[in-house]
Each structure stands twice: as structure tokens, then as C-alpha cells.
Length: 125
Length: 113
Image 1 (cartoon, each protein chain N blue to C red):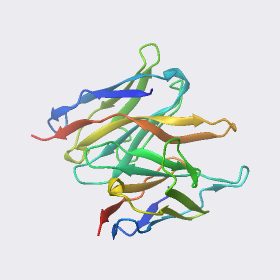
Image 2: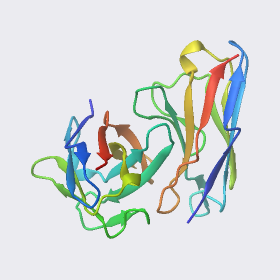
Image 3: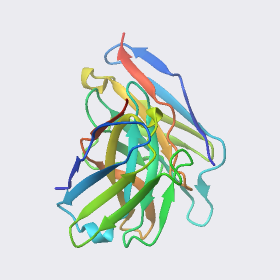
């Protein structure tokens, strides 16, 4: 079955950097786009970024554009999120999620269908 | 960008009764070439990641009980739980995936009355 395990969270000072990782297993990682979605304490879900199956296409939320970089290493079945110039408002649980991909009818779906347990990032001095 | 708005923000329903959650998109998420609505529903229980319940606005994900159903088209959508069970207590989110950013609604907290 699909397994996604995030790591790399912790406490970081404002303005500093942190890199999150997401180790994937149980599916052909190189065939699916992958998302990062975050959730601030007690708040709703906020989509952060998505990367295509081959890493050539990347899209970001306006709130992180220019500061965060999504990437992947298909040889290691691992997704990354490089977070620079961190702000207090970046404090959240960060989830990686696998896109649903192309179904049996041939239609592509960007929406996530499997999620990791999340890793907590706290931006504080 | 498409904005998703859910109503109500919270809802209390008696066990065995029907629960209805609404979701409205600021633009249509119906793709005319395939007649599919690019709208999903997620359930998030406390301390857990979200779980995909419904995609294409009305198709249940494998393993999701049939008391969960989705309906609607274009800009107005509904998630219905036909007979509320205790394990359905959660926050429910809609998400459009018609275009990026694939925005979520603000969530609806469902509780037992």
C-alpha cells in the first residue's frame, strides 16, 4: 500500500531555512505528481506546492512563491521542500501527498489521494 | 484563482440523522470537454491526515461507506452523510482541482448533537 513518511520538521528561527523530505513507497513514485499541503495549528488545509511526475513542472501558492522550492529525486523515491526566509506564518504541519493521477477512463486528476502523517515546522525565535 | 467557500462552518447532527455540507466555487469547475466536475471531498479526523472521500464531485473513493454521497455541478456542490455515525465526527473539506492553485474550502466541523 502507499506509504508516505515526512521528516525534517522542527523549530527554526525566522529568516532561516529548513528542508523537508518525504520518503515514498508502495507505488511507482516516478509516475505520479506530488504535493505539499500545510495546516497551521487549529486551522484549515492550505495547498503549498505541486511537482509533476518528472519534475519538469512546478506550481506554488502565492504565499510561498520565491521562498519555497519543491523538488524530487525519482531514483530515491523522495520528495523535498526547501523552505527559505521562513516566517512565523509558515508554522504548520506539512503533509506530502500523492496525486490521484490518470484513472482507468484516461482522465487526469491532480487531487491528492494518499497523504503522509505530516511533520511539524515551528518558526520561532 | 478559484476560491472555495463552505457552509456551514460547523454542524451538529444527531446520530442516525442526515448531515449536509455545502461547497461553492467562485468559478465553474466543470470541464466541458469531458463533462466532469473537478471537485473532491476530504475527511480529517483529529490528529490524522486528510482522507479522500469523493472525487469527480460524486464518485466515492474505494472503501468509503455508501452513506457518504456527493452531488452538484458547476459551482455548487453538496456532501451528504445519509445516517450519521459516531465515527463520522471530523472536519470536512472540499477542494477544486480544475486549476492551480487547487484550493481547499475553509472546512466544516461536524459534531454529534
